[in-house]
Image 1 (spheres, rainbow, N blue to C red):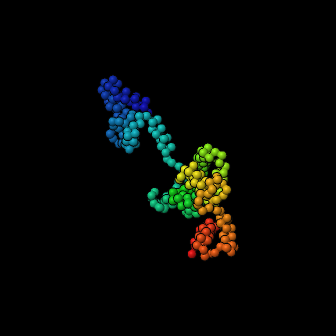
Image 2 (cartoon, helix red, strand yellow):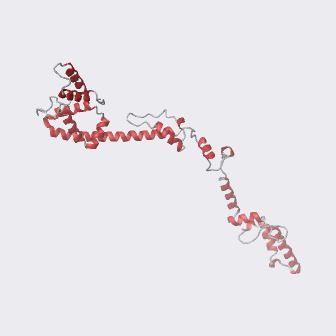
Length: 302
């Protein structure tokens, strides 16, 4: 096509004229060239004008406008653009979802949540594969409403809970190791201070632990509040005041001896069975009240 146009244009040039007939031929040749290019002002309807590349001459006006706007200077640019367009046309029809309403409507949110595996009830979340270590809070029941409110799928929920539980367990382990290190440091200092009496004094601390029923966690909490060394000193003083032989030869402290719960119960029985003890004697009554408070903690005397 292009070569033919060049031939007609050459025939229409002034140098191609041959006398008068040449002039007529030039007119005819020029008209033919314009007809082939679609640039005639007659019925051809072809596009022309500034900004349109030669290869697009003769296209319908609406197509020529696209070429002009896109600035495709060659047919290959147009083909490449079409290929890129094919890559953007989206997923196949069988993979498309038809939304029940607008994108921000409640119906659409529920529809998408269902497609993503989010249950309709919080109780539908299952965590059978998640192990909760001892001492770590079990968050399964507390986490279910939050998972539903944030749109977490049933498949993802166990992984999320497992990650949270592992993080809590790791934090607890770190705290336990730090507490052990602080207790060990305090014990080393007290061993140096107590010297030869350290076994007796640690025995007093052990008795205090037993009487108070302190768990490791409770001891950790109290020790963090007052300091580990001060914590041990207070327990040692408490145990020493129980009136046991480990009072380090001080002859007692002048404070009423503290006995164990079992010892208090036995002493109450002895006083009740002793005919020499007058149950109306104020001193006897005070002693029995003190022992009863130890033997039966949490009770109120009426």
